[in-house]
Length: 130
Image (cartoon, rainbow, N blue to C red; front, top):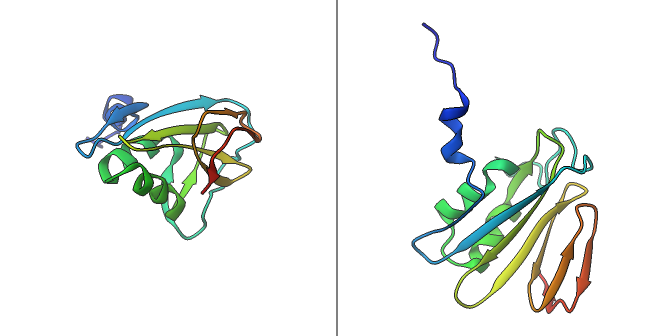
């Protein structure tokens, strides 16, 4: 009998939010806009990470919010479902907003307000782009 990977096998990896032992918290928003691309990635040559598994990847590896935003920068985030992904990543001292726009990972240090739109980021009182 051939082993078949079913939905029940991958559900634990499809984490949409969480907090790890280092106090890094993350949540995801998924927007079905169709502009991310089929098999395109954010960093050709980087460690391939499917956008749907990015939360699990970050929770398993991040030691701080600042470290957490470096992890997907070094990875090649890709989507097979042509959806835009936005992540809010926080620890006790800072919060970042990260999103994939036109096959690029865009990361902002969150200050007061930001609008993520799936095709562009609209800055409203952004402290620093990272």
